[in-house]
Image 1 (tube, rainbow, N blue to C red):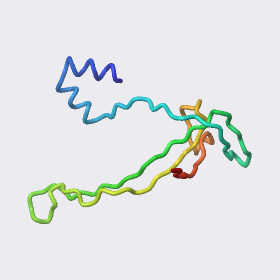
Image 2: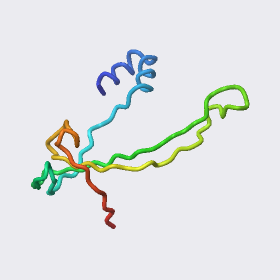
Image 3: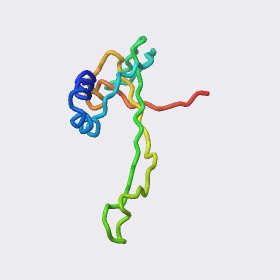
Image 4: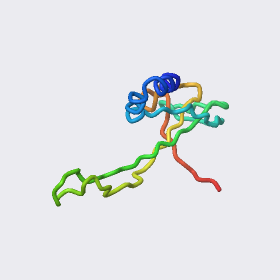
Length: 113
């Protein structure tokens, strides 16, 4: 995808601009791997140097409708706030699958200073 975007940027700037509005191009995150245990279907599974966790941050944004009369806020942002988080841990060597497939487990977050 990155190569295609770079080629499009040079060959067709208008299309590149459109694609940039529609897609997010991300680089792969290199996550720390650690030893840990998960409870899977009632059994404790120990993962030696093969456990990774990811934090998902949720947010909410609420804006007024765009319009020309006084009843609209013309797209003004009314609320932009944090709405919670989730932590999911899974074997580091598994790319696909999640909690519902039995590959990952919901986890908790502890802040250490």
